[in-house]
Amino acid sequence: MNMRRNLKVLYAISFFQGMVFYASVATLYRQAAGLSVFDITLIESASFALSLALELPWGVLADRIGYRRTMIACNALFFLSKLVFWRASGFGGFLAERALLAVVTSGLSGVDESLIVASCGEEDAQRAFGLCASLGTAGLLCSTAVYALLIGDDMRLSALLTAVSYGVAALLTPLLRETRAASPGERPSLRRSLGVLRDTLRDRELLRCVAAFALLGEVQQIVTVFLNQLQYARAGMPPRLISAAYLLTTLAALTSAFSASLTQLLHPRRFGTLLFGLSALCCLLLAATRGAALSVAGVLTIAVCGSLAAPLGASLQNRAITTSDRATALSMCALLGDLLGVGANLLFGRLADLDLRAAMLLGAAFCLLGMLALRRCAAGKRA
Image (cartoon, rainbow, N blue to C red):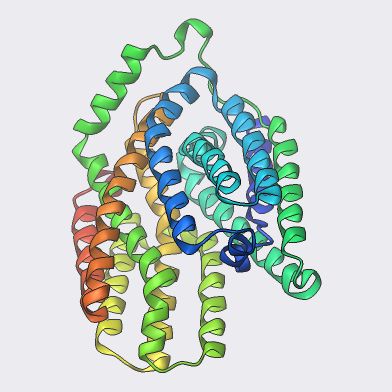
């Protein structure tokens, strides 16, 4: 019963942490507070580098101190980071906010998944992953509507309301129940943690699974957040239609809630192959078309496929992990996926500068590579 209550608490946390009231004006907010676009990108790069550096230490620490304590500490820091963001002005304030955020994101990485798997089991984990993602999107949509209808031009108020929402999430976190049953004498030692990292790097099946979904996730991120705007401009779409298309793409994230049902209907590997294949076809379509309707349909389909694939990928990775030090193993997986994403991102950016069509073709190639990796992933066969 307590373990099922964990899921309800995690769902509520996902919703409240999805409520970022300033999301639609995040860049404008920073510029109004004195940052240039270069300052913003520099801070983001530093934050990402710090997050990568802390990924593995946090995973090892989470397995030592427990997932509940890790969640409490990280969500408290999450709340603090939003308070800093609310009051920040100038480079130093926003750098401090992103440094805190890097600590939080690396700390939560793998811990929430570990809590979900321990609370509901591997069989039901995919459904829970999907619901968490959908509730986060629902929170974002609610906060965006509130900003548009009630807040208006008061961007500082939007930051304050975001901090309040994250404060609620932090207050809910202590309601979680610890899922690690190990006694203090059985907690992971440094030698044991290093052994987990070594075994993870040697597990080719797990690495194929990580690589497959990291490639698809990067294609979804790049195409639906960055290249879509270039594609829409290439299709001659006015700003009003581009804004409407963006809203549809945001709504597509809600489909993650249906990932588990569709997986049961079609079988994990078959469903995954379908998602990778559809994404590849849509990238090819985007490379070939200048039509507005086909462009929106292609981007929207990639967004849906990515949203459906994320819970599936998380489920397959968790099925492939056999160690009880799950957070350590998941942190290693996240680190490898992020490093692969950095390389893919650089390739996308370089090709997009040369020719948008070439970048879309690269996306198709990544989807096909991911599909081949998935079909050789034993976790998908066992599921």
